[in-house]
Image (cartoon, rainbow, N blue to C red; front, top):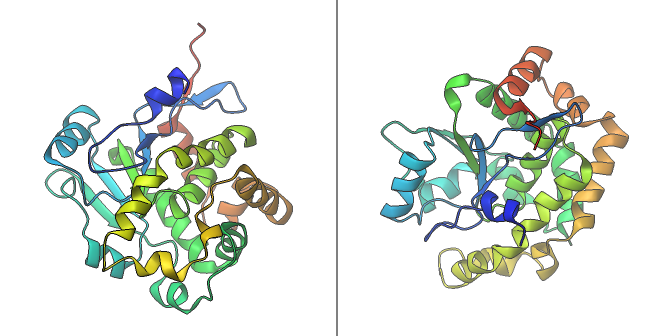
Length: 253
């Protein structure tokens, strides 16, 4: 594992796949700021030490929960939420749609179907408006495993900021290093083990081509990630503010 990857991943005791989106280079000579925006799996098992580090060392003040409200209510939001930390439940897909779906054979198909759903795009736009606020940082967004809904949102944000496709794909596949413990947790939880039974084994794969297909679809249908978010209500001012919050000049080494 590279030194950059080691710095990007935050090794918590009760929370898997917690990673910094900083350090990626944008197309205009700038880079994504470190320690501003994080992505993660579920937060409810964070220990007291995890909470202290997230609040006091990272300074997290915003949690964006991408799970549907039923899952958030059932499983909890975690000890980091409360006090100075603001919490937003912005499900990328509503309960009815999620529960009515016939399980897709792989994330590839599921990602494309999600991108086509108007509720998904509207939720992405709401996330963008939330993180355009200067007071939102540092912030973390998460779902359950931190690979699908979180991985898609990370790809959209990085794409809008001008990060190269190969870096977006690499950020996606890093989840494979941290996903095993989450699957073990789901298998051992009677209240949630049905999630693994409902979806085919291929759904849990984390392969580069899954994200590559998603990026190709967005480019073909919308021209770019910016075209996608604009089509769902994100205006130019929000994009300008997002760049201001998240991009910085690259310091020559």
